[in-house]
Image (tube, rainbow, N blue to C red; front, side, top):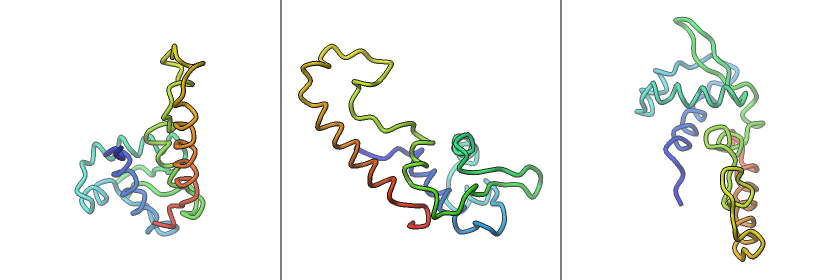
Length: 130
């Protein structure tokens, strides 16, 4: 299992915003340059995080992004969910798939426990902890 590029880059970008919380907005180009990430890719990530109300943007030549809440109030789980959607190991509740083994599945309980453990960890770590 590997964390996606989207999540890794999103966490790196949010770490920079954390350092500027209550100071100023940070431009996408500044983040892109510091972390060596494509600006267009970062814009896509910030669009997802803005939709989840983790960041807000300011337009114009002095524009950029900032956190909507203090870093202590934003969890890594929230960031990952904004970028990837809900964490799901089991397809039993996935609306897109019909599992014909749902009643006799012997792995669902284990997969649900793994999912719960990961969510517990990511929801207990804040952006301030990075």
